[in-house]
Length: 242
Ligand SMILES: *Cc1c(COP(=O)(O)O)cnc(C)c1O
Image 1 (cartoon, rainbow, N blue to C red):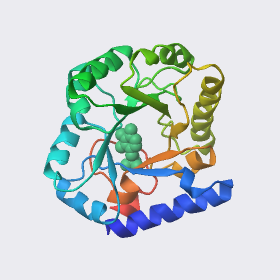
Image 2 (image 1 turned 120 degrees about the horizontal axis):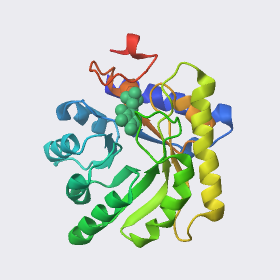
Image 3 (image 1 turned 180 degrees about the vertical axis):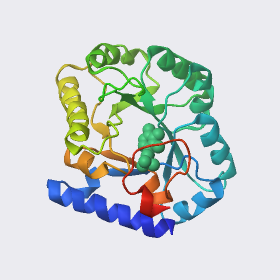
C-alpha cells in the first residue's frame, strides 16, 4: 500500500514539474513519517526511501533505533528546543527548522563533540500565523548574517509551511514569499552560505509549491495515510485516504 501511494505521489510530482516546465530531478520528495510506527516504515524503505522526516526528536530517535539495521537518514522538520540539540547532533542528517541563534549555538557545540556536521534549512513564517514557528520575513537577512559563525551547520536554504487554507491564492502567496526571500539572500546574503533549497509543500499543497519553485516537498499523509490525531493539518485528501 505504501509503495503504491508513494508511486502515486511521485507521479503527481512529475506531472506538476511538467506543467511548470521543471526537471523532476530538481524536486526531492521527503516522506514525513511522524505518527507512523517504525515497523510500517520498513515497507517505505523497501520501496526505495532513503531519508525520512519527523517533527519530534524523541519519536525520530526511537524509530532510528528501531530501524538501525536499515540505512535510513533522518531529517528533523519540527521546532527544536536547545535541550534536544544533543540528540539531533548525534543522529540526524538534516534539520529544517532552524529559527534561533540559541539553537544554532547549541547544535554547533554538540556537533563539535560528535565531530559531525548537519545540513540545515532556515524556517520562515510566511503566513504570519502566530501558531507557526519560523522567522518573520523581515528578520531573515539579519539572522542568516550570524550563521557563518557556526561552521558545522551546512546552511542549504529555506523552509516554510504555507497557511492551511482552501484558498489556493493565499497558499501560493506564502510560497512566492519564500522564493522572493531566497532571491534577496542570493544577492545580499553572507558569502559561503548556499540558499538553493526551498523546502515547501505538504500533502495538501505540494503541487502548488512545485509550481512556485520548491526543491524539497515534505509529504506525509498522501504516502502513509491520514493521521487520525488532533494534529489537525488541513488536507483535502484526508477523507478518502485513510
Ligand atoms: C507533518 C508535517 C509535514 C507533512 O504534512 P502532511 O500533511 O502529512 O503531508 C510537512 N512538514 C512539517 C513541518 C510537518 O510537521
